[in-house]
Amino acid sequence: MRKALTGVLSLAVLIGTVSATGASAGAATAAEPTAKQGSSVAGSSESSSEDIKDRVLAIPGMSLIEEKPYPGYRFFVLNYTQPVDHRHPSKGTFQQRITLLHKDTSRPTVFFTGGYNVSTNPSRSEPTQIIDGNQVSLEYRFFTPSRPAPADWSKLDIWQAASDQHRVFKALKKLYSKNWLTTGGSKGGMTATYFERFYPKDMDGVVAYVAPNDVVNKEDSAYDRFLANVGTKECRDKLNGVQREALIRRGPLEKKYKEYAAANGLTFNTVGSLDRAYEAVVMDYIWAFWQYSLLADCADIPADAKNATDQAIWDSIDGISGFSAYADKGLETYTPYYYQAGTQLGSPDIKQPWLGNLSRYGYQPPRNFVPRTIPMRFQPSVMRDVDTWVKHNAKRMMYVYGQNDPWGAEPFRLGRGARDSYVYTVPGGNHGSKVSGLVADEKAKATAAILRWAGVAPAAVDADPAKAKPLAKFDARLDQRNGEVERGQGTLRP
Image 1 (spheres, rainbow, N blue to C red):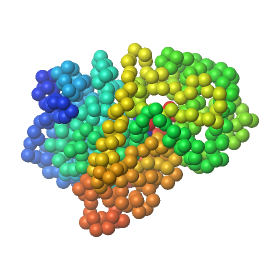
Image 2 (cartoon, one colour):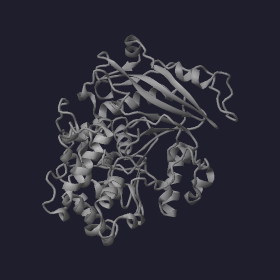
Image 3 (cartoon, rainbow, N blue to C red):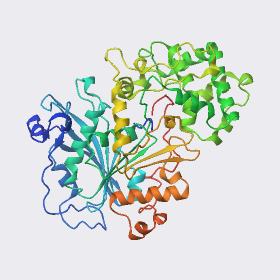
């Protein structure tokens, strides 16, 4: 999941709703709802004349940006006042963007985290379709417009982000009192995992898709082994050939790149030069192919790279990696991700031996993609802590990976302390892998677990998990089909 892409309450009110003590800081006390349930959706079991929008907006710190209609739901785009620092909530606030896909307060709720910007159009994660529930989606802190001003980047870490989610949950739980699940894909799956690690009592289950787990940032041989064996040799050879030619023909293709940059107003101040940006795009080419594409898509790769035209090589690299990715305009949106990758999350460093000495810079570190005015220091213990916690404490947690997705080369694994938790792999799957792509028996078991965790498993499913299926029908506008992943610029970003 890569590119996804006002009202202010007084500080006195915010401080009155925040508990900020040590690692448990950040819990907000939402306004007490009335005894009535909020009405909204035609055919809903909610019977009160009090509108759900009014009940949501009665929560201290919550304000409406807009409401968008969608059949069978109410969809709200909201702002929520958050402390910049959950340990010291008196030291400033910011507005965090949230969306609410409301079905019925009598239904369970899914808390969706993408790890980046939040979409302001109605959509439904797979668990939301499975349980036929409500969905709350949260924009990750420091992705604009959910960025404090001025931005203290030291307050962008996984605990602060988990505390954002904890406060939103506490604020909405009194309206949506049934079971809650948290979910997300890629960085969103990582976010869901970190939330569970720091606030394990909040959710009734976690469904994390294609979530990388770079435990030891300096040891990335798993990625090298993956790329040496993924797919077929024929496909790997075709991809390797195009990538080599792109570096061999650096001169004429960079001339084309300069023309492209001039025509599109691209600059390269952050990465340092057009040459560095060009190579970064080329170095991402093979990774990006396996992240976004399927083995069948190898038919579109030039078969004889050495004899292909410059235009054919350009088109293949641009179509998969995207030549605007490492320009300032392409990097700006994702500065918070690269900051986190270089301070806590870690990032892959891939050898790609088939390139020989053609690379001048190797895989460039996240530091190269963040303005130098923002200080960064890597904290190696953070991911080890999360990994150890998941192995020994996972309870009602599910991980779904794609067989051919490079981000799954270093996955989360379950240890002896895990309870009612599972790791599944979609055969041939990419970074868009979902439960719906699993083999039949695993698909049924995973679906049954999600229904059970949400508290809505039919009696027939309790008796026989093989009968499990989503409670809501597939909606082409709301739901993403299995195997699809939003194709953004193909940078090395989860």
